Length: 286
Ligand SMILES: Nc1nc2c(ncn2[C@@H]2O[C@H](COP(=O)(O)OP(=O)(O)OP(=O)(O)O)[C@@H](O)[C@H]2O)c(=O)[nH]1
Ligand SMILES: [Mg+2]
Image 1 (cartoon, rainbow, N blue to C red):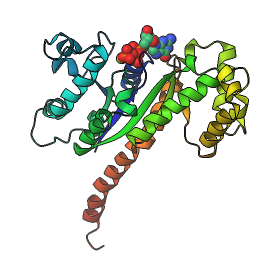
Image 2 (cartoon, protein in one colour):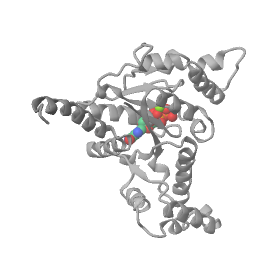
Image 3 (cartoon, helix red, strand yellow):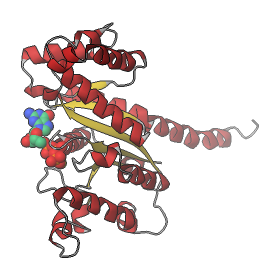
Image 4 (cartoon, helix red, strand yellow):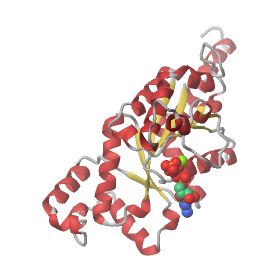
């Protein structure tokens, strides 16, 4: 079994930074987490990628092509379609170029996929989901990690809007899913308090309070309340506030995603499988 986190979220929400911090954290814990860059427009990131889509296709290829003549947004969609069509390239990068899947060390098979900030790839287009299906066919267990900038979540209307964006990705991808609020270290003490209030899991009628102080909230009070209670009543959307300056915060998040992927549990099973024949050998009468 192999493990994958698909890192998605709006432009500039902190996806690539998340990948760097996660990889570094894993390294410090003597764990091997690799990162694959699937953003064909990426110019710079601070991790060293296991594979890089820009070696297959670069955004400029789609934009400078005389026939295609894409703008930056259409070009990006084209690049991801191209990736899906040329899936053998990705498979070779992930599977060491062998035809058959190589089953490496369990620790070597944990990969973060750093995606472009084009959120429509994951809200209503099919490429995001196709990528996940490909990974699954290559034995990956996947979890979507949706990054949202916490600075845009500290007033009621924005919180609702961010929650709906998360919900939209969840509904389209139909995958195990974690929502991460990034850049929490940049929040003022007041903003952090406000955010914590929204994140309180059982603050009853919290969403009703969100209508106060925002023009959208006041104008569409009933709608806002209805959306709020829908989200609250069904526990639809939860957010993890990530402070990249706090090692414990990164560790807690990784643990949560590991649990969703059942990462540690597989290791247990392998230990048990390994022990059993040994025990039988030692006591042949049993
Ligand atoms: N202080 C702080 N800055 C952050 C954090 N995460 C990201 N940033 C900054 O936010 C900016 C965007 O971060 P990226 O990681 O490039 O965001 P991205 O989602 O990969 O962006 P695109 O790939 O362009 O969609 C950079 O200047 C980062 O340094 C964080 O946790 N704390
Ligand atoms: Mg990026």
